[in-house]
Image (cartoon, rainbow, N blue to C red; front, side, top):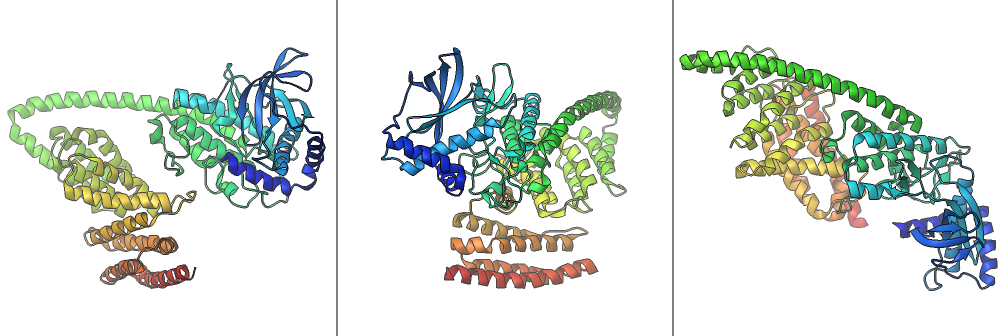
Amino acid sequence: MKAVENKEKESVHREAGSGCAGCAAGQQADSGSGGNRPCGEGTVVGNRYRLLRMIGKGGSARVWLAEDLALQKKWAVKQSRFFDSGMLSEEQQMLAACDIKREAEILKKLSHPMIPGIRDVFEEDGLVYVVMDYVEGITLEKYRKTKGPVPERLVRRWAVELCRVLYYLHTRTPPVIYRDLKPSNIMLTPGGHIRLIDFGIAREYREGKTADTAILGTTGYAAPEQHGRRQSDARCDIYSLGITLWELLTGQPPLEDSGEIRRYSREESGGGISGEMERILRRATSYDSRDRYPDCRRMALDLLESEGRIKEQRKKKQRRILCRLAAGLMAVLFLICTAVYLSVTGHARELQYRNYLDFGAVTGAGEAVVRAEKAVRIHGDREEVYEHLLRYMEERAFGDKESRAFSSFWKTYRESIADQPFYPELLLRIGKLYFYRYRGEDDSLRVRILRSEPYFASAVSCGNAPEAIRKESETYETVCVFCLRYVFDTSLVREPTEKEYRKILEALEGCIGKVDGISGEEAVYSKLTLLAEMGDILNSLRFGMAKAGVSDSRIAKLYRDFLKRVQSLHPTRKKTEAMQEELMENLSVYLENLERAYRNAADE
């Protein structure tokens, strides 16, 4: 990454005009004097700074801990990088000096306790030296590697401090955009305070400019627009701050071992991230910069206010626990009395259980869950309790209210049946319930996949799953993972391979075979919706599959299978009739798009 940044910085300097003219003149003068000697520990530069030890280095500079012989004080001395003639040209060495001078010019204008101050700038033997405050401590990257995930309370305090210093930078005239915020550029002092270091690629925001000179930033931390051609602004730093906070909370860097960008979630922290913090980080790291916080002050206020909301949520949770304990005690008393009664009348106990499973007169999901809970208390290890409740949900509208009621029931009792042989099939059915039938406030395919994927993954990982259940779960899991990784994750820059495309085709072929089995009041609507979304997925992937060399005849056959099933449906409502007609037209267009994409790929 450093090597890439150096090349990109060269492009910056070539277009900087007068900004590097002084560097060029100074470099030519020094090179003519026969200087440019590398220096090491013990060397005195500027007639007063003894270099003690190197404490950091990058592509264009080294940082030394130095002793001021006049003041007997420690400083950090940044030295432009010396290169042997066989490594880099004279021009490239000049650009390294320009980098440091540009950073020093920015730091000279700044005065903030979280930013190292500039004390001296001078040139000696063709090298540029910048003397600045020495920040003692360790980087947050080293802290995270040593300690693991950082508690949310501590991360929130650091986040507020970072928001303050970034807000200071963004409100300068002109604004200063840091552009490389990450744990390795943040120091934690022995006193527990935060300091921002390394302004190597920081820049001043230019009003009216539409693009940066070059693409800079660290992969994984840089905002999506930093990889494009738009000018970096304050919201780029807000994105990087959000990714940095995710890393500290989860203990995982943004790049996985495979080189792919990690999709952070609360689960990666082991439940250590509150819903409030997740909401803040989701907004800060939105792909579209317009959806992020407009400035760091707003983000800091949200962080401070969230702490109060979290405390209030904890109080409510404690009250709910007390209420549940009270209800539990009442239930225990009830069960004791019931047990005494049923020990004498075992037949009555079974009749009561059967009565709870009769959902014929049930008027809503809440009542159905209450009856199922009562049945579980009698025979908690019987499959029919869960089967009756699940069938009730499958045969009726399944929205947000029904989802909340069912999820509450499932979370309460799932562990008690995790070792039962029917558990994997229940997971598969619940996953399909969300995949096909969920119609909440946001019932997009992305949301339904996000809700259903954990159930399919759990079914696949069950050691006691029958082969047929495991294979069907793997089919749905493949579709979900592919969509989340390559269709919905717009920040991903890696294209799928031919093998991955073939795998998603196999999964879609497996899914289409399950469409015929959809039943219930909205079966036609569900089938049309799923077929439409699978068609959209294939259409969106046509260029990538053409480039990867995937067989177009196989894709075309899949489209024809879609069309055959759409034509076989008999909708009874005007809405579903319109959907059927629209889908048949779209599938025909998709086939034409497919042929055009493969012709274009062949021409290339």
